[in-house]
Length: 231
Length: 182
Image (tube, rainbow over all chains, first blue to last red; front, side, top):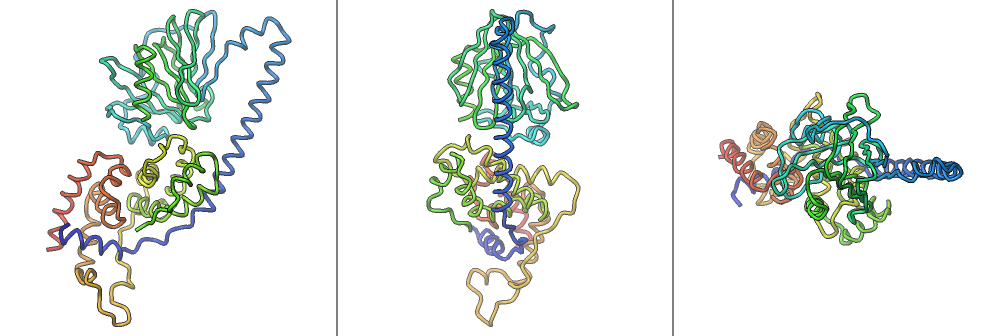
């Protein structure tokens, strides 16, 4: 260590930093308020699901539609007989302009969880951050969403598409084959609704975050990539 | 500069299972370094306070992704630093670091420590002024590394930079500061 570096350390002890605030009680209050809010939402959601299933099971014609509905984190998957109109579009269609990582994190309010790779193209919408990766020579779209935004991404699949648990995170789905349609949407007016045909998709939830990977990869390849990303 | 609680991994484990009291202990242990890190980046006490508070709340929400056994401090500081950066972008008064008035003269006629004797009052002022004049990216690295006592690895994680970038920024900043110090 040079004399200058030692001098900087000594100087650091004499810097007049503002008095540090006592954050303990304020952080505690916000955490407890948030926990109560989440609990209220869960209680209401459970109550609604119970009512919906009660109605559905009482009406034979309604059974099939309710039982073909999956909800995972911020994503919704609906199995339908007829897909909504859609066309082939780039993976990042509907996610807005290319941004720097800092800008994307600032706009989305979500610090990106991503290990091992350093992509250059980032996208963001409030509550959602995305980036384009290259894996085994193929483009893959990674999107991460905050946990309290039901239906920010919605997917419609036909009976030909396989939808199965994927065994990653606290909850996960692997969607493969057939034709399936993706819709990005949110309650915020700034987030444009875009519909396009989608590739194979891995959806999973870790903590309060929903991850989504889309690309022309096998389930095994996608799971390996998912584990590398969140390592 | 900031001690780690002896049972930190236990506190983290309990907090991950939803124990808010355990998390409060972590907040108490790290609020000082979190606030100062935010202050170095945001250069405004009110912004730093908000950034530290929001950082702790976001870290609580993200605890499920924290890897057991990993160092908690740089993980937390990365979240706080990100919050502080977001606030720095907004317009507002930016403060300069200053030397504490009370330390300008040795108290009670006691002889200054050998370390403190390295710096005369004039040198302190000049060196700190030179730090304040550094570009933001260099000033942040120097402040976190030497004023707040973070390791090079911690600085890299807190600022979300490769370690090589931290090294080169530190080297460039020291080169500039040497002109004021020599």
